[in-house]
Image (cartoon, rainbow, N blue to C red):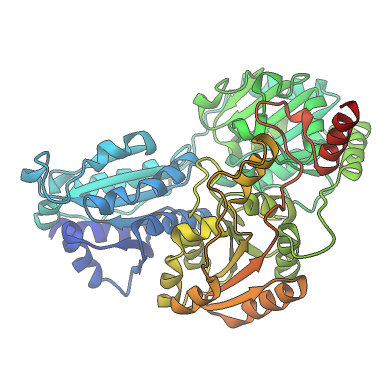
Length: 566
């Protein structure tokens, strides 16, 4: 049958099973929005307050559900406003399709009103992108976009469609979409070598990254951990793949990882890396990272092998498939003495914070207690993000949604809306600092418009907390441009945008406020007043090895020693 390009866009989304789209209309994309109007009973559209919010919402939807997130934007500034969200998804390998519309084909390249070469702009931050100049190629291109977004290492794909292409007609035939299957091609020889490395190891340590979540391999990972009988650590992106409540779990690795994990990885003789890319925030000084260990890496992306850290063996392929094969090949291992040693570190160096006053870690632990560990936790970027990773015991994958690679302030609120749309049965909590919340706080209006009952917790310390922490420790307490000493009232702001606002300045007030928010079934902003000099501990100084992790007690001891020497 003959359909317009706009009709083809909507029919292709229906083919893919898309039920929710996040976006913002404009002149170039009007034909698509007009067609979307006719299918509002099949595809829900969430009009965000800003295109960046739409891209983050699509990202949050994808992270929470495992499905491809979809966002719309018009040409020019509408399209460029998606860029940060696309880059965020790219860095964390999140499957997303961004559909933009551009000026007509005859106007391309002529500096037309609201014209931008968005395909050129986004080339470095997408898995692939397209500009479709012939309506006959539109359906095939959209189908390819969804396959590319999902296949192998996931990521965002952009499809740009000139306005006249959305109006032109072409023959369309509905196609049944088959699920994207992972490649089963795994090197048996490399797997056998990996088995020998594990058999030989006396002190193995398992490090899980975001690939553990994206691959859906958590059952295989948990079986693998038992067979290897090794302590476990994770990256920020790997949270929940292995339960944070398990006795073999030693805490996060890296700059704000636990001493147990940082010391253990520095002492192990075999580091088994599952779907992680050796970010600088994990490795510290890469030349000294796991320097006593052979490194065995499993990853779907061959480009990650030997990119940041030199490894001894790399298994390229789908992680779920690789570990299924490994679990059949492995014999049961036993390392009681090694595990006991790391457990001693865990007991000797627990995470700790002030027992008095309202603090970031207390807020996280109270959220964990009241949600019984069964919420979707979304974060912005900074101290609150690290406290969430440290103190909320994630037991399942896809329950921490956070910008790990790009570190996008302003990510969380839009992402929380997407997460709640994808998982309406779950409690969704976005945790932000006051600096991050300001970035995209206009999305509270979106939550109120659709009555999306997300709980927004603002760690309000009136500073850019993580930057201030660095200024305190490494810049001589010169607080350049990090003090937020204005008079913004987040409670009044929430109410003005149509949500409920509650202020909490003590532990009792926060306990009561969060309990009330859980019962309200509407968007709520909780303004938590915490101290401007609360810090995230432990910490590894930039450029230092992770074996030199220090906490507040270590810092005071060092300062006291230096004072005595003087």
